[in-house]
Length: 188
Image (cartoon, rainbow, N blue to C red; front, side, top):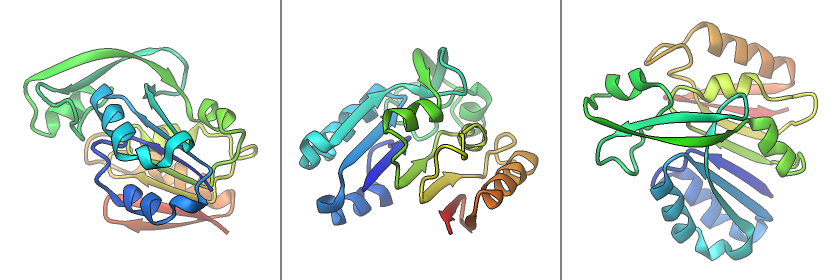
């Protein structure tokens, strides 16, 4: 099983529990986070996977470039780091810091994984739906996608973009189920 997690934060989540429980069936686990400290935590926390683990520090964006990542001051593992300053500030963080990061898009990631991704977890603070809208579903069909939908049209706003994604996923034979702020799309 090949798994990709984008936005791992401190790795204290259901993804860690799933991987720990299924470690014998995992062939490759690619974990990506924009905050360097989160990537270091992932390397330590998932060390039991040994050579099956690939940890990358970059941002996700729909073109390969360099973006400015904004995060709360003293928030080296903040769950609210985002390429959108408004996103960070609306979550109550008035003092922010930033860094510049190279980006990858989802198609680059799937290409690296040779199109073989069984499970995709994505939580990238306001950019999840936009990134998923650009995935080439003709070429790449992960069996399971879990993403945060609640910020698809701005902070705490979801409407047009999430509806477009639901239509796209449905057209590509996914069944979508909302669970709180996340949605799970499973290939039928």
